[in-house]
Length: 183
Image (cartoon, rainbow, N blue to C red):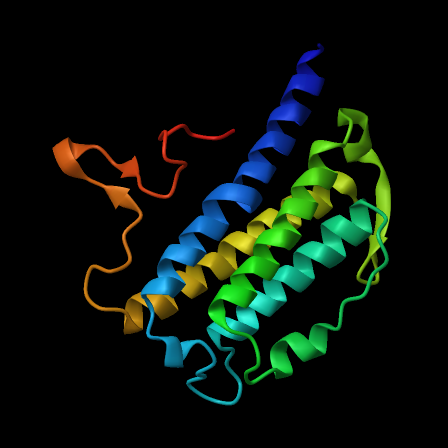
């Protein structure tokens, strides 16, 4: 396999790892430690709750990857993601996000390296498949950080932990039970 194809495959595999494993698991750990009454709490009218961000992540991943890259119908209602002030439980929201991420990883996993250079029209703009995947991963990372911060601000001290630092090592606690770094 040519080096460019190997690089493209590594990019696609790592994108699925972030969207299908690391970020959703960190979100789950963080939000399960947060008091349940904080799921839909907003500090002010111009801020989003954790529930809004979960809806938003699922909507963004579905619109950009499942629909925009994969060709499924675009059924997103972006404004509703931010307008919601309740409705979904944490287990239901996490299940929906997990399902959307699994669909996105199926789309990404089926892409040929040459597909990364193709263009798509997503959310009113023309972009490459590479840029769409890259955008979704970085967007997901940013909101993962926000959700972790929200949880750490309200969860009991030490309840949000992602690494075991014993022996000076940072062993991830969010990986599968066998500890393998899924790539």
